[in-house]
Amino acid sequence: MQITNQKRIAARLLKCGVNRVWINPSFVDQVAAAVQTDDIREFIDEGWIKAKPVKGTSRVRARARLAQKKKGRRKGQGTRSGSSNARNPRKNRWMRTIRSQRRVLKELRADETIEPSQYRRYYLKAKGGSYRSIAHMHSQMVLEGVSFPGGDE
Image (cartoon, rainbow, N blue to C red; front, side, top):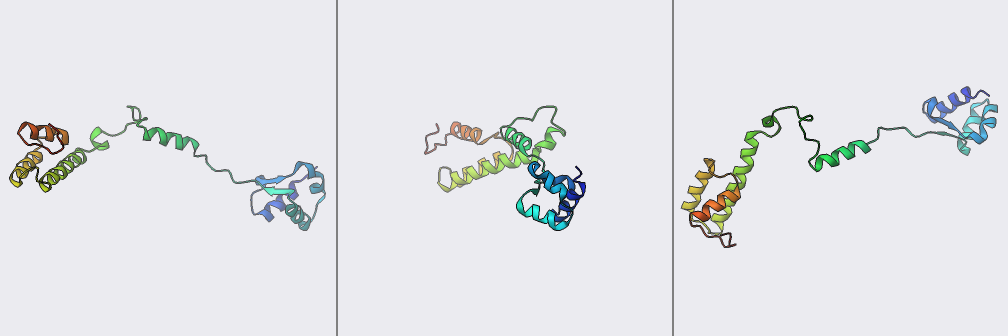
């Protein structure tokens, strides 16, 4: 039983490829007997002939990979290409630390925890790279006698 022509006609009517044409196995005999385009059109309307859905690339594996990357996995030696400086540039590291330190200093000056003269001194120290982090800067300030209202001492 040849249904090649019927599939070709159906593909043209459904505007899809021949391989995407699906014929209901229960009605293959009737479809094989059909010769005219109108017959095939009728079978399509009745649901005996359909176009299979387009197969896409599954994103399941990609999503799993992204979920792992969010957790910080998949960063080992085998994954890396580029120096540590290329992956996380020194300048970006510096900008991140200095901006956060300057922001804290401005807040301390605004709520009058430190005097403007002290602010200038700590600002210049921060600029010189004296402090690794905000916590380090706070601990140095406490050692030098600055008291914080939150009670960080």
